[in-house]
Image (tube, rainbow, N blue to C red; front, side, top):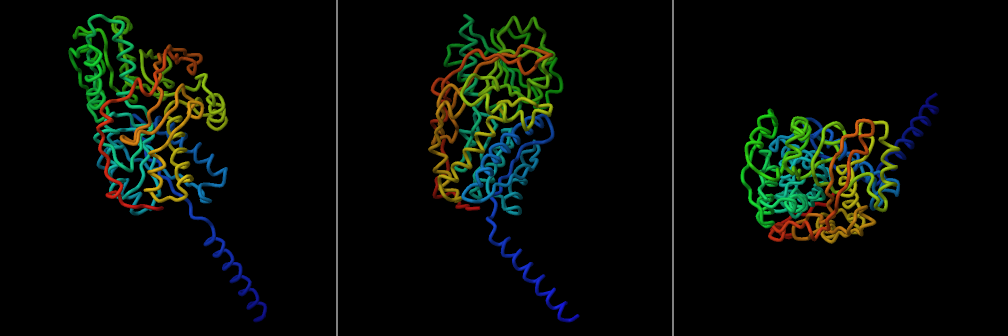
Length: 415
């Protein structure tokens, strides 16, 4: 009996040792934290953002990971509180030892979290925050911004709208947060450069408790164009109350309207707005990307992909490709690769080639002007593309003055 027990214990010990050796030999995963507000007015945007990151990571893992290491995605909700978001970012880095961070959505949250990332040298991939300030005063050496900004969209939109009016009078409708204020400042500069004048501004809280009051104030100011810098679900509440007569009398332009603000409210009209991509664009790769998305998420309420998913997919893919090209996870080497990022139009599924501006760390890309025609039976068909503009046509001049931290002052970080 003692011999049997001894043989059994030896066998167990060998098995455990083999398991420990296998675990020790397994490649360490690269952990990416996806950070965007899963609660509040950007919750649906966050779902679309996460799906884009998931699709890019699935692509990489099917090929065997990156540098032979599997990619693991973890999610945290930073909320819409910038101070809390900074704490979440530090916890993810110091306690959880994540390798990279992607996401944001809310520009104030992005600015807060990316400042923490810069302190530790962690690369922050801003997938979908579009405040112009993200690539100017809130830019960092470790941060890369992949959505077009409200300045890019408004250069296209305001030029398009003001060309239809002689007096070129513009009233601004501004959300009182980082994105709204930054977007309004850019709009003022653009209006002046186009020979127009800003004749008034209505500033509303980020929670937009009373759209009707804002609409009455807008109506009281004689203007030709209403430049709307209001985001998230606030857009749905606003345009559900704007009288059709007022939409006809003035040209309303919205700095950016995401699919997540259109698709859930198919009966609510939208004026002119900017986007970076649509599921039915006749561009190479778009149909295949849409089909792949629908195979995975076609049973959900967001059963067609939008610009948020698109941007998160390409942003995450850019990060993974940069690590592969660098041959290391060392942040300095990966940053150098991202600073030289280029995509052809076909690779990007847009009308023009795209490239990362090494000065501002902001992706320069095609923007589209679109309008929304409510179609309750087939909401996926409600969006109509009217025009597109090249990166050179919509470039934001302030980005030429961006000052990033030096590489020497950026801590090394190699997860």
